[in-house]
Structures are given as C-alpha cells and as structure tokens.
Length: 331
Image 1: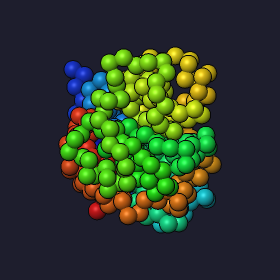
Image 2: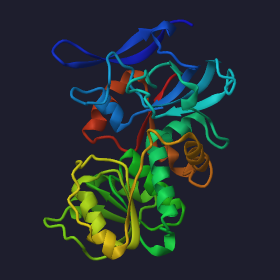
Image 3: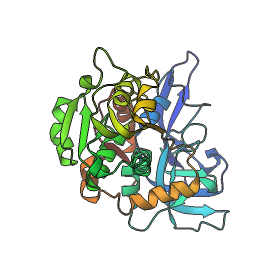
C-alpha cells in the first residue's frame, strides 16, 4: 500500500491541539482484523470536540478523528469479511482511542464492522452515520414505548442538526405530526422540506419558570439537546408519553421532579449509540435501509466536503453553524 492521507490531531507542549492533513502508511494504523479502504466519513459534534482544545474526547494523541466510516474491505483476517465487501463502522472507540474515519484507510476490530445492508449505498450510510443511527434508535424506542402517530405531536429538538434533521424526516415519513425546535429562524424552509408541521423557537422550550407539571403538549420527543430543554419537555409530555434523549448541547443538568413520572406515567429513555449491541445495531441499520429510509430527503440533509475542507467543518459544527450532515468524500 502506498502512503495515504489522513487528518491527524496532535497536542503540542502548551496544550494547544493542531489538526493537519498528513501522509500516513499502513504501519501507522492501529492493530485490527479488518483493513478498510474508506470511501466516506461524516462530521459529528463529537468529532468537532476531538479536534479542539479541552474537548475531553481523545484519550491519547496523535489521533485520527472520525467516529463514522463506510468503505470496502481491503484485507481481513476474520473469515466473516472478504475483500471488496462493502461495510460500515460507527462508534465504539473509533476516532477516540482508535484511529478513525478521517483517513483513506482504516484498520479496525472485526466485531465493530457491520455489513452494508441491501438497499443502502456507502454514501447513504454516511449521510446517516452516527447521527442517523442515533435518530433511528430514538424513533424505534419511542415506538416501543407506545408512542404512535395517533397519540399526537412528537417534538424534535435541535432540529437542524444531524440527529434532529434525521429524526424529523423519519418521523414524518412514518406518519407522525412533527414539531421542530430550532434557534435558526432562517432554516424554516429546510425543516418544512423534512415534513415538519410546526416550528417552535428554541427559547420557547426554556420558559423563565419550569413547572413540575405543565399543560400536556407532546405525545413524545426526540431530544439531542438535554439541559433545561429536557426539563420542560418532561413537564409537558402527555400521559404515558416518552422522550428519547441522546445529547447534551444545552448542558448536563436536568432540574426536574418525580411528578411527571408518577402522575403521568411518562418514560425517559436513554439512547446509547456507542456501545449498542451488535444484534441491535444491525437491526437499526436494516431499518435505515427499509422503512426508516428517507430516500427523497437524503440529498437535502447531506452535503459533500473534501478532506481539505474538513478542518473548517469541524470548527463550524462546534459553533452550531452546520445544517444537516457534512459528508467527507474520499476520491
């Protein structure tokens, strides 16, 4: 194998973190069972944190970030995978303590690798990536908690972000009435294209005083935001409702009481995409290739960037200036 390009983050003496496109060789890659020629990766908030100072994501430097990748198997010591096979890898330690997807080649443990489901292309898999996987897992958990389209409106917070955009599109496709929360007044047309019926200003979900129990408003919610926003959602869920929470962009503290749980029987469901068991992981990807596939909207949600454009995109996602999904394309 010839030298190949990768984005490498490094911490220098004063604690400053650099991110540069470098030439690597196969010997630079960590140990693993499957060598993958990477076709696509994607930009996630976690990747932005991995490339910034005090991000507290990377366990050891130098590191190649990128918690998502899709590509073809170049070599495998595990008989479950063969040369040329199309595969997906997301989460686990990828891009955190194991070189990740921002590289033309990656080598990973076989137990992290998912065969690409029929009905999904390598690029579509990365338009979804961890964000789409998280959104799909959130929607599935709401369904399992009995939140059906006839129960009422489902709220999606952070709706112009990766998880939010995907969740809004999936729920709309399944026949739910979706209310979307955003702080970006210029993105209303984008949200309407995803099928959103109602748009709510972000500040309206953080009233000056959050009551322990408020007027019943939503049958369920997909919340990648957390913080006080989640506190308000809990107070206004309908009886028997559920919220699937997967993020913390509004903070980690959730001031609430037991009242919504014991008086309305609501459910707070945690979504973990990192260590999701492989059987469940394959189930989610299969649904992303089938009934949850928002095929007509993928081009609206995803946009391509090159490896050279990646450093800027990582800064933009941290500052909340990325709409939908940025897809890193390796030619």
